Image (cartoon, rainbow over all chains, first blue to last red; front, side, top):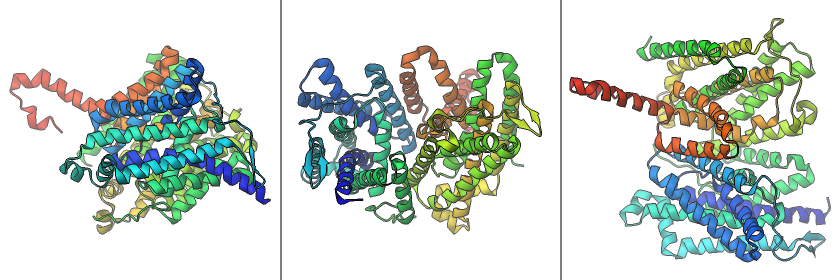
Length: 293
Length: 332
């Protein structure tokens, strides 16, 4: 194993890992305001990629505009999901809400299949496909786009949660919804907002990854799975942990594919995840569970 | 014998009688296949409801146990020529053994972390089913599995296989009811409510959790071996992550803690796609929509929904005439 190919695996891993991280962030945001795992998160990622392709091909829009529209559309769908399927039954046990999100994910997947068929689509790379040499490894321009946009989103979310009044209100909801409601925060509105932000973050991830890994109506299942794994790896509920978990998972997978075999890359990532959970039962950056009886 | 136990046994008897009489009434081979699949799925779902509904531990890896049973018996009987009865026993045994090995560390985890661990385990198994082509036949499947036979007697007709599976389903439900009405069942419900409180009462929570995990995996393994010898063909697609999710949906949709409800959930989710076939393209769309609507409007699942309906009908028909004597008693 020479250094150049090791670097290559690292770059590939970070690129894919960045989108896992974005998916994981989506999970975290909804989990923090509602306490549920949104199984439709992977579908938001799929919609980001597929709608971009659709707007470009069917409507002939330029790529940046198509992506913006796709992200806006997915955000709208996120809002609709919350309004139509979650809010009317907010008081049900969490497991019921989780099953509802499973139903929603099946619904979205089915609609995507009906609209766009079962084919695999590619989105053109944002700025050419000519690789740049980087210490002996080939660096695709799209990789830089993925990393830059992911960092931008992370920074934006950090600003949002620490500076803006809405972000702080959402944070308050995640600590204690009842107390948040008592100080005048509209918890319902925050839940709606959390679904919209999750959908937005997921859709951006889907759109920037689509030029690298291709996209089809069913990519959401695996991406959702990886995003959830990244959340757990980093410690559920911790946004920093989710992003870091995504990157670690991506790198592990890419190293596994390169060093062992690409057929077992997912298996390897999950074996390491399991081993880690058995040693650290609440993830890498998760808080120790100090619940009182 | 408690009243609840007798009621459950009466229910089991009625259920078996209905399913015994069902095939001649349906009279069509296709319906018989669907009914057999319902029974197999119900077998897994009952085990899972013990784990999820009663002990409060989640598993998103039960499709893996189902597949493990199926592939073990397939490989033993087809590749190595072991008699079918023996290979089926080995399949269930292997599934239970693996469940014990995985459960030992995994059941220390809680909530979403446990969900992730079992999910990861299921994904690893499903990758193994796909990639170890020499043993499992890979993505294109394992063909030529011998039909079900015991002590040299082959179950040659689909109807006889159905009755055999039905008998085993009856056995599984009977075991489940007996667990629930025993000391073990009470211990499980106690640790579901509060692990610390249960521990303080002297319940060895680690042992009980592992016990019920292994039992539910064994039921899944049993369904798996039966599935393999019933269809004589298995492919990894049947044992993936989505099927694990579907199994959890069966339990929750049926109504978490109710065994009859879980069985209803399993039957409903198995039959529904067959009915929706008629709608071809929008099939999956309708499936998702029905799932969402059921969960929204039947928060206690099919079991809770049907008992609510029953109470409503009861009131409409009798209560008005007698000036509601059912007001207190009807809410049980």
